Image (cartoon, rainbow, N blue to C red; front, side, top):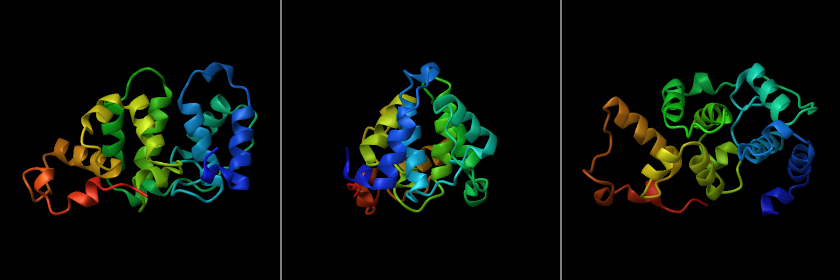
Length: 191
């Protein structure tokens, strides 16, 4: 168990969520990540709203499918759509690059796009334990994007860079990352 999971409330909720049998989605790698994000949000970690950015109906569906019998309360609707004007574009970028192996990829795309509204590293905004969990999430759900991030750029910066390039917007001052004076902001270790 990681240090962040030792926080009593978060660890208890994570264990309770994962203890619920969900045969229909037992092989879905996203189930653990969903539990991690729900526990983090309930413990006040990350930036996600109570519905993880899925809206009330989407969140209820996630709970019913992945954690049947879970009676988590659903707070106010996600404000992320209002705070991130490019939410739809980021969401579409993720959807266009999903692995196509499980329907939960669409849920993950909505959650990740919503977490881009946060002010921390994307893994922190999602309520994950570390960047490695986010990298695993990207490889499972969006392998084409994961492969494209060959320089190990910070994920939020990488997604925005992909979005901007798709729109023909180039805001980087240098012709390549290696020549940029802000290199460390994009590629430095995340703590």
